Length: 269
Image (cartoon, rainbow, N blue to C red; front, side, top):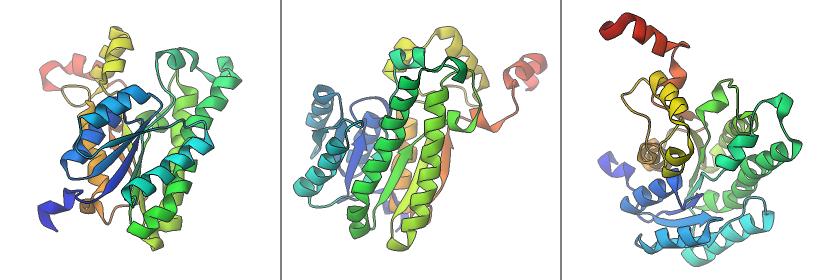
């Protein structure tokens, strides 16, 4: 296969939450590597605008809280494109308004908790369930976007982080149950990723705290995560399944307080 193994020529890929951020970067990269991309998003105008800019891409509305919407998406893709090779479950309930409500468990609203699981976990499960018969036919694969917060305790985002942890286990379950049918399933865990929405909404002081704990010289960009997703979706990763690829610039890999140790040791750290 050689270097051509990273190519996605002839593949049909669904990218949920594909209208912006990591999803849009992934849609662009998969298109560049030869895939026909379906941009599935609740933000219909943005999804259509992106699809119009990518050769062969199409936009289909998606509401992850609606079982009917998810099943209709997969059916429409197979009807219009004739096959399905890649499902990238990237969409999630996330945004400034949600983040302000998603704190610690003592102060967690039941409605937010339920909706987080309905969108992130239930929606992902239904998408996988609908896609699996078609992925069996093409020996295709699933890549789920999770988060490094699924691996660590935090003061905030209890609903989001625990829902993403559930998707990690779902990833392993699908890999185990469908590997003999030729279907792979993996997950990518970004850290803080500088999407336009996050850059506008995240307090600079908190961003600086995360930057200080990053082992690289910058925070990740959507294109960094897209590279990880496209790799796992490609034949270059043909022997990788049931795995979690942490793509957070090393934030989850080190002892706590590394920023303070850097300051103490100065240029020697």
